[in-house]
Every structure is written in C-alpha cells, then in structure tokens.
Length: 447
Ligand SMILES: Nc1ncnc2c1ncn2[C@@H]1O[C@H](COP(=O)(O)OP(=O)(O)O)[C@@H](O)[C@H]1O
Ligand SMILES: [Mg+2]
Image 1 (cartoon, rainbow, N blue to C red):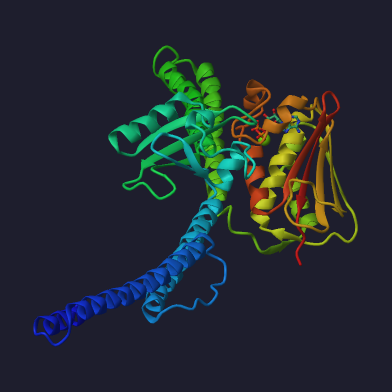
Image 2: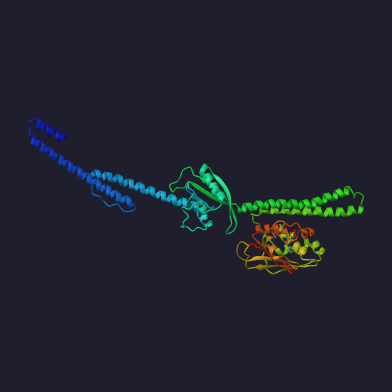
C-alpha cells in the first residue's frame, strides 16, 4: 500500500510518467499476490497435515517444511494434539478403572441410560443373569434382563420423578433368590449415556434369618407356655375342687414338679445355645483328653442309663491325640449324644462309643489332616432319611410327643452343631430305620 501511494505521488508531481507509475503498481500487485498465494499454500499444507495426524492419532508426526508463520500454527496444532491424546488416555484409564471397581463389587450392578436401556453391568450382574462378557447386553431394555414388573415400575418412577426408588423381586432359577433393587437416577448423564444405576442386593439369607428368628421366638414361647399352662391348671385345681384331696395333691405336685423341671431344662438349653452362639467365632484353645472326657460324661449319665436299663460300652483306640477344644462344651456335646442314644435306643438298649483317628476329614469339616473321630451308636428304631438333615434345627423333633415324654427340649442337637462349628469340627448322622443310628463327631487334634 505505501509503495502504491509513493508511485501515485511521484506521478502527480510529474517526476515519473503515469505509464511507469501504473506499470510499477501492477508489478507490485503481482509480487504481493504471489507472496500471499505462497503463504496460503503453506497453510493449506498445514491443514492437510493436521487433518492426517488427527485422523491417525497414534502415528508419528513427520517433519513438515513450511514458512515460519505456518510453523508457529503447526506448533500450536501439535500441542493441541498432545493435550487431546493425554485427555483421551486419561478418559480410557478412567473407564477401565470404573469397570474394574464395578467388577470388584460383590453385588450385581447395572448402568442404564434414560430410556431404560443397559449401558453397562458388572461381573456379578453378568454372572447372575448368565451373560458372558461381550454378549450383547448393551442396548437391551431393562425388561429384557430383569423381567419383574415391580423393578421396571420402580425404574420408570425413578426416571420420571428423578428420585431414588427401591423394589424387591425374586429370581426363580437356578435356586430361588430374593433381591432388593436400589434404583438411583444420576444428576448428570455421563458421556456413555448412563443416567440411571441399579444396585441389587441379595436378601435371601437375611429373610431366612428373620423367618428363623421369628419361628424360634414362637417355638420357644410355645414350649414354655405348655408346661406353664399345665402348672397353672393344677394350682387352680388344688386351690379349688381338689383342695382337701390328699391323694390328688400328691399326684398333681408330682406332675407340677416334672413340668417345672421341663421349663428349667428348656431355659438352661436356651441360655447355653445363646452363650455358644456369642462365642462361636472365637476358637477354643485347650488340649482335651477325649478318653477322660467320655468316661466322665458316661458317669454323669449313670442314673439315666440305669433307668433305661441300657448298657454303654467305650472303645478307645491306642494313641489318640488330645483334641483342640473346650472340655465343658465338648462334654455337653457327648452328654447330648449319649443321652439321645440312651433315650431313643429303646428299653435295655446297647450304646457303643468308639474313638479312633481318621485320616480323612468329612466334607463338612474345615481344614486338612488327620482328626479324631468319635462315634456314638445305638440300636434303636433309627431315623427316616428325610428327617436327618433337619435334626440339628432348633426344636426339630421326629416325634414331638415322644421327645417331650422322654424329657427332651428339641435343642440338644442344635447345641451340638453350634459347639462343633466353634471347634471347627463336624457332626455326621447315619441311620437305617429299624437298625439304629450313629452320630459321629469329628474334632481337630492339638498341634
Ligand atoms: N439316637 C437317636 N435315635 C433316633 N432319633 C434321634 C436320636 N437322636 C436324636 N434323635 C431325633 O432327633 C430329635 C432332636 O434331638 P435333640 O435335638 O437332642 O432333641 P430332644 O432329644 O430334646 O428331642 C429327637 O427329638 C429325635 O427325634
Ligand atoms: Mg436330645
């Protein structure tokens, strides 16, 4: 521009002819145009170069020869490319970590978009719904995964009102399980479209425990109420109609004593069960001589054995190691098993107790190596196969009336089971109806 101004001024002043001035202007214009075009071509090359690099982010960047200005532009583009690559790597790492965190959660977890379609799931969810990694879970409507209408309604409500909702549902197969679903809408939709999360929590065990607790309280109350009602009834009779009946008084007082003893036994058993449960997670540490323990226990049962005219034999193999346990609790185990064998082994029954070392542990016993095996065998009427797995449940009895008549509380084997769990031992029950029953206790040795 200043060049053209000077030429025009010289032409006006008559220092050069107009022809020369105009020709010089044209030459100047051509030079400028050539310069601008060469710069533009430079920028064009930079743009093509940048395009190629951006569409191929991993590739190395070759050197590009350009003018200094284009080089500066190129430097800015390259810096942006680096920044973008770093951000992309960070985003990839974040996505991987997020999946790792989700997979480490034991509870099933789903990520959904706002149209209720699955965006992602953790390993536990895939396993629960039998979906292999990589199977086409993404994009499925929630109804294609969890069919329960309660969950679908809760998910819709969470999306509609933008608030967390909850629902319970049951999966029938392979084993019936009840889950609680917590459904939470996210305040911001993430880059992958996640706008809603569903966390499942297996409630089967808790519900079972709740039911067991309620059943236990109902059973315990019932067991106590029956003798109590009988005692109260006899007191009323003794205060009223049988007031002066000497013979009835003797008879009724005898029954009342039996009922009161029954209540005492029940309360003792309930207390010992709760004490054992409290200590169940601390292992006993004493070295117990099983031979001595069994002899003492048999002696304690002497009266009951004589009353039933039973015979108890004890056969201890040589070299039995001491058991790792607590003698008070182990004595309770064998007291219960021996008293059952004497009670249910029939009048004048034979009870055989044997102690050996077993090289293999039963599947129910934790740990490895040899263990002490104590079998209590009777030759009574035995137990039908269907009852065996339930015998260690509290208050479970094959014949409630018979157990009560024989002074049972229905808690003996439950106590045995809990004590053995604390000792990391095991109880195995075998029986043939009509031929008797064998209750075998496995205990870990010391050392
Ligand atoms: N040796 C046995 N022979 C047959 N049945 C038995 C024997 N031991 C236990 N049972 C059955 O298991 C049930 C539960 O035993 P237990 O828990 O000791 O309660 P209880 O003896 O107070 O009834 C008994 O009621 C009885 O039906
Ligand atoms: Mg018993």
